[in-house]
Amino acid sequence: MSTDTLADVLASVRLTGAVYFDLECAPPWIAEAPASSVVARHVMPAADHVLEFHAITRGHCVGGILGEEPVRLEAGDVLCFPHGDPHVLSSAPGMKPPGVDLAPYRRPGMTFPFSLKLGTGEADAHVVCGFLGCSTRPFNPLLASLPRVLRASDHDGSPGGRLAGFVALLAAEMGSERPGKEAVLARLSELMFVEVVRRHLEALPPERTGWLSGLRDPHVGKALAALHARPGDPWTLEALAGEAGLSRSALAERFSALVGEPPMQYLARWRMQVAAELLTTTHDGIAGIGARVGYASEAAFNRAFKKLVGVPPATWRRQRRSEPATRVQRAHDPDDRA
Image (cartoon, rainbow, N blue to C red; front, top):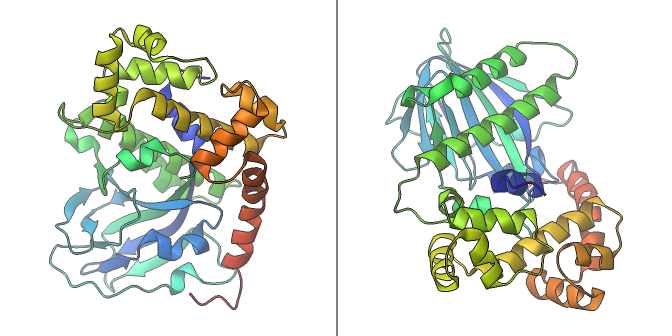
């Protein structure tokens, strides 16, 4: 496996993107978005968890969690809501939210991206709204470490102008009718999110704790990289401390303080995430998958998997392979009014 721990987690939790709304906005305007859990089965029915993002491609606006202080956004900025909070975008602060309209999310046969005009005058702002889906089971250390709101901007002095470049590409593709448009938009939204997470990681204050802070720590980061690179190794705390360049006690204390759990407990949960992904995406046998994540016998792997995940590996595989089709069918059921 890669020693890029963030990349490992992003691959394992199956980050997938899609762009749904193309907003042309004329002041005064305001748009309220519901919690992502309310619309998830309509926009990304196969995902465990859905988060929403907004990219400002022209003009400016404000946005934030419903009932909280908004932030100002300019062209090139990206605003994400990792935990799916209900939120508001508007031309100016202090405007009264109009209430949620779920109709745009539930139009049968609608093609995406769907264009909407907000306000009645000449549009002076353009916003691209999209969704990102990811797995949360059995273990997603990244999602838990992210704040409720992520805002990223090249105006903050970040080098390279990469984020604005992604937003410009997104805007150009929105106006294109070339084949493969939806696939390009999906990949661009995933790239933008990864860049937003990188900016957040780089800007974390030294006193912050959490999985991302552990990733950035010179010693805990080495330990995490080693566990992710070789999850099937017969790890001991002593061996891991050698990788991290600390004593056993120092690593245990530092790892727990930053990541929120002891190293061996983290390893057990990460092994189950790797195993769960292999169960879902391969036809490998249960014993072989167990061996790849460090278990000498199928029985030992079965016990460990059921203890941490709640069901045996074979049951997990069967459930996960049937869930996407079931969710998609339910999301497009004409009798579903929820």
